[in-house]
Image (cartoon, rainbow, N blue to C red):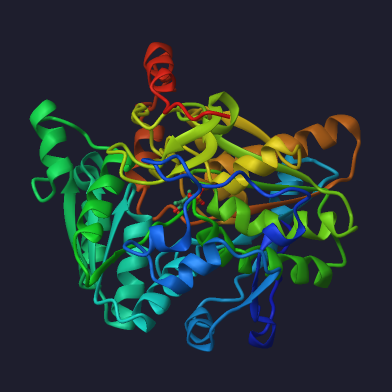
Length: 454
Ligand SMILES: *Cc1c(COP(=O)(O)O)cnc(C)c1O
């Protein structure tokens, strides 16, 4: 049994700026389009939903953007987050690889999401916003925004996907502890929710539906804005504190990754760990293999189409070019709720097109196998989403063993699984199955993609 090895930075190493990958890309991503005119949108088109400061970050091409001091002061509660060398895992795998993981489960909400929730709440407060609406799937984003809302004194209204609302009462209690209001989606509170319920009264809901409800409320009120927990450029930007810290910590370890791995739902924690390394590579630094890992039951990057699509089911959002399964696609039920989104961040999609990253998909049972194995070596129970990254890291380490290659592997452990013990219990009881999406439904959802002239 070897000892735990942890690389800690002191507070003076808390990043002062977010890193914007846009500045280093060889070509910009395609423009975001207005759904009516199909013309590129401008900042004003987004003004009903977001404060201007966040819109300017959304379109920024500056390499570095200052992190406001009040945001850094809150980050200090859990940042810099630790980087661990997985010595016991390496030993158990008998691999010559060196495995490191950045642990984001140390935040008060248990995942990376407060990195952007705190920033978004800050800018909304600064703009005089009194209320923010949002959606949540598994509950991690809602928990993070509820926390941030209570810090800045902003009312938070959360549309929670119905199936999670019923299955995860503790997540709801967590959000309510911070004073947020949680509504099962589809709901009777919005016209889109009522429309969905009229057509399908038993609807389990989906992220796409919940987004439409939250956007509808925000668009209809002057005092209310909307916040999204992933996908958008400014969200990915805020998460780059993860990778910047990791670079400094790998330096402390006197090492540098050959392979960087993150799980991908909308792409934000993946971007957080990977973009600073990809940026360093694009500026002439060492080349890294970067792997995005997604669920086989909702495989936007590996099975989706790179096309213009809506971000929501109700078609209220602008059109972004991204890897998508179609905005009407409803993934089958599986336990990594944070990965059940039909699209992928446009910026992550774009760098996939540029060949800067790889993608792969795993079924859930293999991911739980990996997560439980990891927990028994490293003493941390990963979130079901993070198990996808764990699985890929283990697979790469096993390949290193087969090839006698002493590679350095870094992955992001995006959160802990303490609210997901029912999923682990189902796994232990043999109740999990590997869900496949319906190929016909996928074909239908893709056939329904909006047509946008090239
Ligand atoms: C929300 C969530 C994800 C997926 O979202 P991304 O934006 O792709 O990072 C992954 N892991 C955890 C722990 C999450 O809460």
